[in-house]
Image 1 (cartoon, rainbow, N blue to C red):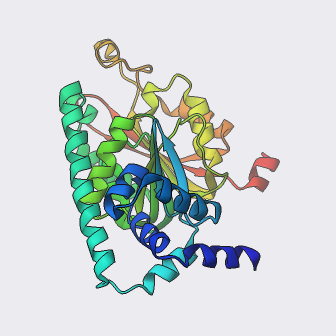
Image 2 (image 1 turned 180 degrees about the horizontal axis):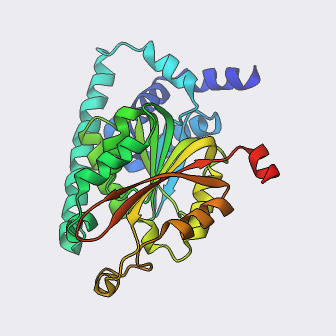
Length: 312
């Protein structure tokens, strides 16, 4: 009861309600929130600290910035925000300002990528059939997913594709530049409430054990120094019975691809992946091949329940 009372007290203030309404629509940094609300950083920082301590916002450090968003488990926030009238003038003004900032963020991210030569898509560069790969991923996933994690999300394209299947999706990537484009993509598509992104190392995910029903890695593993460790970490955050989905190059002999694109691995075969997945507590369940200039394969694995591991 004490937790509920402290959360209710934390929401009972106009500025904090405005902050919750904004951060329920996507992640914003302090500078952006100051621009939307027209208030000073010290004042907003105090409000953000109180909301974070009450568990109504989560704090996501990313380089020199810190982003704030409503955590998935904060159901009280959604109950309270549902009582706020959509036509409230202050909230409407906040939404307009937030949309302007999201557009500016998208333009800045795109400009940065153009300047730095990072507007590059590996599937296109390798002449691979992106539509066929996405279709195979969709075919391998359940029709409805409560919580999904996309590791190495890049510009967030896979989150966009899988959004209709999932209630809540999170994309993680080590690149702040990629995440800037991902946020812009999700905001433009109206997906920022259900799909979020954050900076993270795939070997040390800042996420709780067994917190996702499905985990995806698309064209990520061939860059990994230690694929077994990456798969073990992905399996750690997957619930028993959950789906681990990999889309990557199958074994190939194209040495020029490794040299040109700095791949760490020349694709993967079923036996080595099955071995790594088994060590991670998962069982390889199915695979699908996508023909093309280079062989692409989609592997589907399932997280084994604890008792199956005990008796293995």
